[in-house]
Length: 190
Image (cartoon, rainbow, N blue to C red; front, side):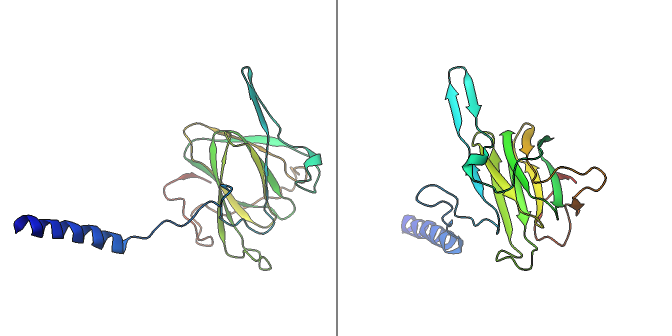
């Protein structure tokens, strides 16, 4: 009798934990693309990487792709150390266009634009040097970049206008602001 009672208790434990659990939702479609919606005005371009026994060549930007209507007028590279965050930042006059050369980065975006269909939404994008692609950050969207890897992340940016040192198009909020419904926990940065 005791063995039967113990088996019932074990079955009840399984059933009670399953009853309290939530099943994961689908995160990719049949073509293995993320089902997470992008914010209005965002898009990706998957780049082509050519590998051979000597190394690799990656196509980063070509206006013939028709990916983004604005021309390439300026570019720069930046790095983020492991565990660090750069953000929250917003641009009124230009879009950022990111390409991760190496490392891993989480790009977190918040849409405060009143006319946007994604107003008030958070969007998280994962970028990596092992999956080369471009992504744009629309004007008036708050964004923060977090290194989620174990080495420096190296990012190329192709903003849609040249940098104006006398009047930077950059607006900042602290990482722990109550104005954006997202927390980076104990992450360091500004």
